[in-house]
Amino acid sequence: MAHRASASAWRIAEACASPRRYPVAHRGARVPARCRSASRATAQPQHSGFAFSFRDANADAASLRAHYEREGWVVVRGVADAALIDALQAATDALQKEAETFTRSRRHRGVFFETQSASGRKSEEAVRPGALRKIGAPSKRGGAFAALVRSERIQRIARRLCFGGTSDSRDSPKLRCAVDQVNTKAPDSEGSGFAWHQDASFLKPLARAEFDEHGGVNVVVALDRSDDANGGFEVLGRTHVEGEAPKTLRDAYDGATESVAKLQSESSPIFDESYRRCPTLAPGDAVFFHPMLAHGSGRNASTRRRRIATLWYVGHACSST
Ligand SMILES: O=C(O)CCC(=O)C(=O)O
Image (cartoon, protein in one colour):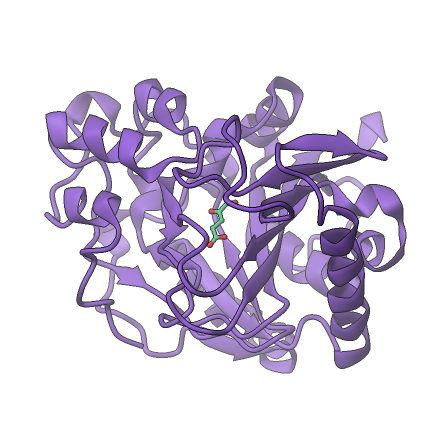
């Protein structure tokens, strides 16, 4: 797995090319205590064992967690089996078909269809009818996406990463899924990519409070193969321990990579790209990553589509269940 060498098509990456850190004032801001155990003092050279089979993830939970704590992410292969992937792909096909005449982002039968504009801004007209960037809350339709959100395989690993141990005692916090969505990245550079960001900054207030108190973990599940040639999901390893980026970054993040790039070029780069990785994922493989980890992706210049499901879990006190 190599760094993507050229980022010329993705201006935000150019702005982040220097391995400088946040300005001191932003360091250490609001990283929840339960997920703060990684530190620069414990940082090791890049670990080649970044990907675990589902079986090894359970058998060697300590190594899994050690990688996650140090890097802020880890790959677990085959968390969704072939039958679930088939059902998720069919459900996504059906949602994309349902939106084939949409030229603007809109909610329809409980699901939010975010159309793909030329800039990436969700408020602008779609590049063509039915061009989608994201589908928000597909689990509201039940079926395969509801099954994915409830997946015991995913939740078991997520609990281990977030809370440690087996985390199955009656009193330990549980996880609830605050956000589920599908990111549909069409081929031939139709999709505009995703600027670097930290998902925790986009949690709604209740979920953010739960995350601050109990921690959380986010998951990307590949529905199609995802790699560095088709706009694969990318992480900036170790940024999860650097605190939260300034609010101005979140406010500038409207789907267009350019607005964030401009902001970043005005001052020092916000995220450190030294440990940038684009893990190759087969359908059913997952990246578990810390909600404070900076991540994003570039355009899909290939002829293959790239669809991923994303799930954001936050800790949830047992007493309030
Ligand atoms: O689809 C991608 O590659 C990135 C998506 C992402 O970062 C997000 O939806 O928060």
